[in-house]
Length: 257
Ligand SMILES: Nc1ncnc2c1ncn2[C@@H]1O[C@H](COP(=O)(O)OP(=O)(O)OP(=O)(O)O)[C@@H](O)[C@H]1O
Image (cartoon, rainbow, N blue to C red):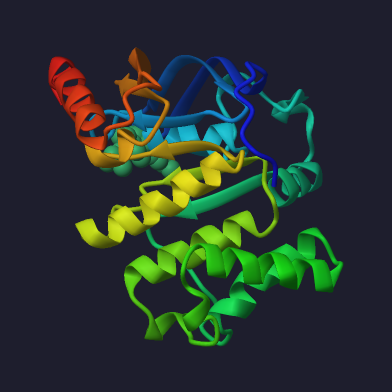
């Protein structure tokens, strides 16, 4: 992984993105024309009321689901132009994912769960094992490497999920409420791990309800009724966590959050 370079190269760009879900009565519009650019090396949080379309947007931007209309470009690839196989390859090699509930294969150790997708992405097993060892050490879970998912805490498991996501060396990490199921102490551990991944150059897009999590981002995008209604850029000089959090909470209160 390379050190973060704060160049203004777009890694992800969406234009006029819409999404409707077909319900029994009529199509329900959920996203109503999203124009969003995420720059390489940025850490962007998506916030908004429940049902505003945050997870739907994350799924579209990562190619997990298709928009009803509009364009998405990821590293100059139009997702629309890729077939399923090409998209899967792009997700395996260039994107990482973490969700609120990490799903691990129960019959494999934490180590093997992390190793498996990394080997699929880059079959040089020695280099991959070295990378996995480093990740587990960096996120302070090397001592649970040979345990099973059922034997470790939620915070440890989420950090393992982050290792698994980073083991394929993705350019961009998509995180949907990664701390939603954790207490505040475990949340801090996962946020520190995310911040470390960001410092090493991974672009991050994170959906969150939590101002404490959002305060770690460079920029917060606020969604209401499927539209981006406001953005907050956090001043890089606000290194003090309490100051950043206050800035975020004040801004959110103006959004009626
Ligand atoms: N597969 C689906 N079929 C029909 N409706 C859906 C589907 N997925 C999401 N929706 C609807 O789209 C809207 C937005 O959902 P989404 O999960 O994106 O919101 P969100 O902002 O992430 O919400 P939350 O904060 O509660 O997780 C909701 O009204 C939801 O019911």
